Length: 438
Image 1 (cartoon, rainbow, N blue to C red):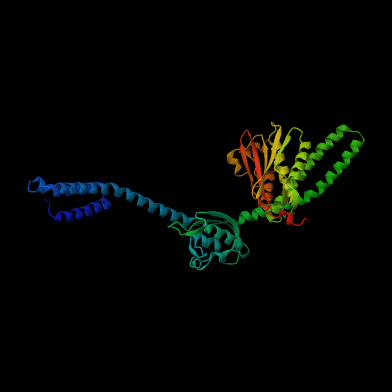
Image 2 (image 1 turned 90 degrees about the vertical axis):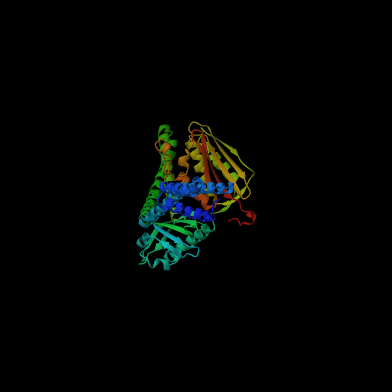
């Protein structure tokens, strides 16, 4: 029989194996286990001791336990080491980053800021923890920032990017792009993370471009309007003289003038959108009547395409009729333009619970999936059509913004070589009969 002291021996030797594995590695640990086993079994091997079945099981379990320790501990040590190195790398990256990182709790109190925050804001490192995040945001911008901050605070791992101004320690204003991410439930962070990038130079450049577009558009609009009037007068005189060839040339010139005027109005719309002054003149109108009117007008101009309609029951909307007309004309014209081999365009409407869905389907060249995500960006044009089709890449951007201003949504389904379906929704007013007609 083994003595009662062997239980204590097992614990002691197990401790030695753990220590050896942790600090010396597998080899010495295996040697320690083998040596301990020999020492425990020596009385048995010398014939001075016999083991019961339970003691044999206990000894086997001890050997198995040591083997498991030797097998598992190096793996845990490797994982732990990698986690430490990863943490150090991340910490180093944040500390050396040119972007500002701020950890904020739900009260807006700053819990951590990297050195870039000091460089961007001008506040001393020891001043920053004493501030609320709202203290450094321009007062006029703080409302929308707070609104988005508290909105993401209630949604785990939600993220939002905003463009706003912050006030530096010396009172100077700069523009930042601020990406806020909710990591309140992450045990290692427990904060809302703000990633700030100074984009003052970019904003200034964009403002200069917008100012230029606005001035150029206004300056070009007046002489082009006069030129169009003179062209129409010339066309009428040539028709009266039955000068068919000259009338044809003047008609072509008139179409090109119309195209330029359309581009100028697009540029003016863009400047209005960027300045936040695209006002909607809402009124009550029948959407089916508007679609029929647009389809008839474009159908008369484009004889190669038949515009097919599949409209739900007649529906009244409270919206800006001129702007919705602009969206429809843009989508249908694009459908015709980018389906030169097809002969039809399909327009459909569908009433839903609280909105109307309008779709324009063409059977043309289609759009690749990688291009769709940028399709509604300003000045963006699909790479496959840049050389073949003219345009500024503003029509879809303006249409998207018009629908957003109506609190609707716009999107597209497309397959290369088969065509595209552009759709948008407009909200339905519940008490439309009570809205006063202007």
